[in-house]
Amino acid sequence: MHKEGIIDKLAPLAPSSQTVPASFPGGRKSYAVGIGLHDSSAALIPYLVSFQEPFVLISTGTWCISLNPFNQQPLTAKELRHDCLCYLQYNGKPVKASRLFAGNEHEEQVKRISDYFHQNVVNYRSMEFNPAVMDRIQKVPIINPSHLETKGTVKWSSFAQRDLSQFESDEEAYHQLMFDIMEQQSTSTQLVIHNTHVKRIFVDGGFSKNKIYMNMLAAAFPQMEVFAASMAQSSALGTALAIHQSWNSSAIPNDLVELKYFHCNIQLKF
Image 1 (tube, helix red, strand yellow):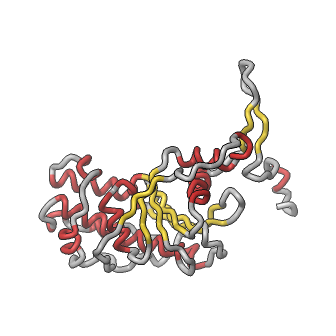
Image 2 (cartoon, one colour):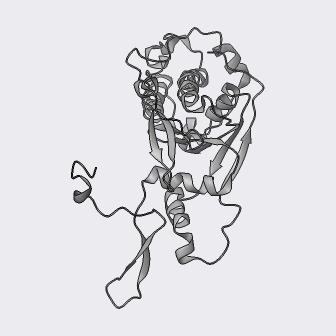
């Protein structure tokens, strides 16, 4: 960046733990303010502070992003083709990540299911995992057996191509949707677990409250400990932790993240 003259056009580089004084109007006292962090990098900090053993965090929302701060190998050409990238931890270390547009697809397909079966879309937020339905679904053929497109990005799931008339109930249709999404999720998350010693998967965001998603994730990764994580304002908390020594003399609490363990006796076969 020095050779190309780019560095002169950027703000001064500084550690993410550095603070600067900031004055507010109205005669208030000055505050120490951090230099700023990317929200995904900030949301990872409470987990890095709380857990020492290697883990992957699946941050779910419109995108489901699998973050592995313990995979610091350079991105390969294959991983780049498969839509992997690297975030940075607040301390500058890389975080290998893969992403899936599953939250958006879930929203669209849930509306299709609710319209077809004349059900309230809210019902699917609290639907229970049904192992008997799951067992039947595993016998239904996958429409797109390939997990990845030839150009490398993760495909949309098979569900958009399924005929809803084949399902006996909206419960069965919704389990099939989650199974098809989990087929993708397992492939996406495996991209960042590859060749690391990860034994735990944490899930935060919307899908962490979805019992069907969480049970299927546990079934897709039977060798892992799978947890739904609950933490209010994780990005804001992470930024506060990054500059903890500048504003708080107390020890960091050891209960920042609330966890719920999921185990499933069914093993998913894709």
